[in-house]
Image (cartoon, rainbow, N blue to C red):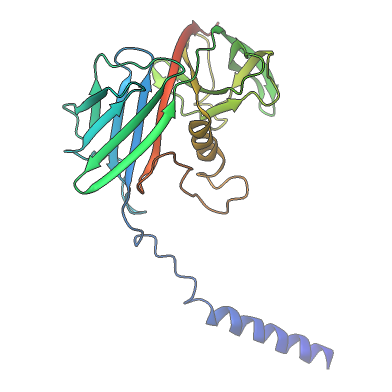
Length: 268
């Protein structure tokens, strides 16, 4: 009798699973298109760059498809408005001389037809970049060389940072953002890890490394943190999700007013 019950239970499970096949239907191409905005204002000349595109269906290529004809404006704390014009590259808007001032607040406004997207960002104070150098660590696949960044975090102030690494002039795709929750007022030696540990991402003798050090405000930090931890399905997320945005109006992306410093070295 117990064996019969077991067999009937298995049959019932199979029937239930079969009846559920039509319910799990992932319509990956049905999501509504959204504008994607990547807006950067730095404290350096020629550092203003706004990229505007649209989301694509799941099966589309990852090629950048820029959106032309947008009206892009940045307003400073004194109410001065600067128009950011489209370059020869479709969907890429730049300004050769506009640069921000640390501790000042900036507003971004983008108009595309009848849609308006806005964002506000504070450019943090400069935190001096002291050094960038190679550092060897022994990991599961043996010794590896990584880039270390040295700086001293100001005491008593909430600070947020982003690190961008280039190897032989190519962006290494590392998404590194940090805060000073555990390093307030301390000297920091930050290790820059690659997006994945492969032979391709290894730093080798003769590689020319450039490290950009950005001070960012908290909403921008939350954006990059969510990109790193959520967009790839990590953390508590079961699947990739859109990162947290500081842009109002329904667009995806970010507006970052930040300071930027850089140093270079050659791997020995």
